[in-house]
Image (cartoon, rainbow, N blue to C red; front, side, top):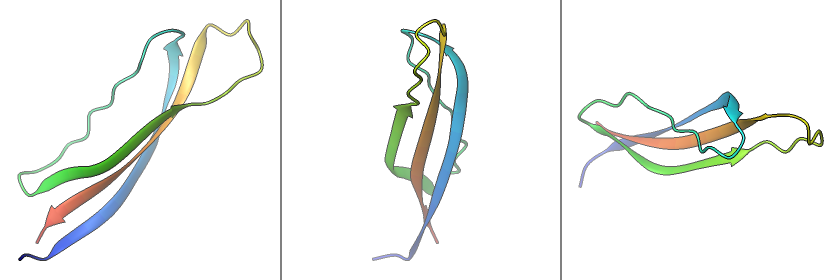
Length: 64
């Protein structure tokens, strides 16, 4: 059994061409791993808009 710390990270991804899925890169060291993550498109009413904005969050576990 080991002691761990869990931190929350979040961010936005702006202006992704519609129809494409974005990706993110999170820098982790050897003691870290992502234990949960979600990414969601923000909903806009304007159908003429050609890009989408996204929000993401992740829980990162760090072994101490």
